[in-house]
Image 1 (tube, helix red, strand yellow):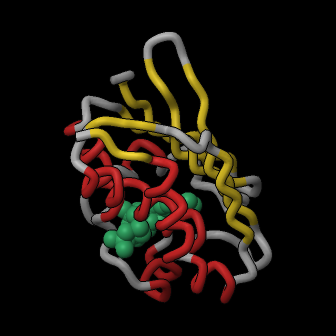
Image 2 (cartoon, helix red, strand yellow; image 1 turned 90 degrees about the vertical axis):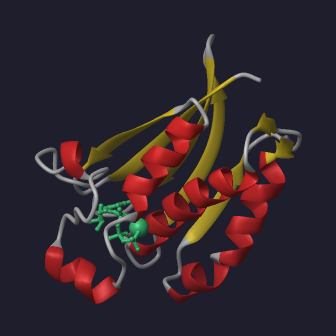
Image 3 (cartoon, rainbow, N blue to C red; image 1 turned 180 degrees about the vertical axis):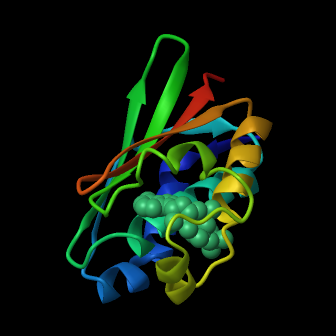
Amino acid sequence: KSINLSNLLSRIVEETSVIAKRKNVTVVLDVPEKLEVKGDERLFYFIFKNLIDNAIKYNHEGGKVEIKYSTLPKEQVISVCDTGPGIPKSHLPFIFERFYRVDKSRSRKLGGTGLGLSIVKLAVEKLNGKVDVESEVGKGTCFKVYLPYT
Ligand code: ATP
Ligand code: MG
């Protein structure tokens, strides 16, 4: 089934606007208006809801989140980048594992289970894609979702 990912992302940004406003985090959605993808809408929803939720939740007060689209020869890329604290290199290999959380005390305060990213990874794989992370402590984090062309 073909779905408009641009509309879906707008909906998620709308749904997360209350928590973003509370933290004074600006969310910028910069993707083409007619971005059609194929697959189960619930998987796409779960993936981007979780990534955007994390990008706001772990961000600094007054921070920024940018959702962007780009193309590669063999795949398309949707990135969710934030200006949060970043993730130390030593933790990066583990963040897609179940129940893994970088800062136990901070994470406990923020709630959540540590399952989000592990299910994001499974959902992306179900769509024949890949998910990757780039992060710099003190600068921020980018999650990139690679999806095949349909
Ligand atoms: P849940 O998503 O189940 O509510 P969670 O957010 O703690 O809980 P994950 O989404 O799997 O779990 O994230 C795992 C850990 O990775 C988080 O606890 C956090 O420490 C770190 N993390 C995830 N996204 C970011 C981000 N954008 N910036 C900084 N750290 C992050
Ligand atoms: Mg999460």
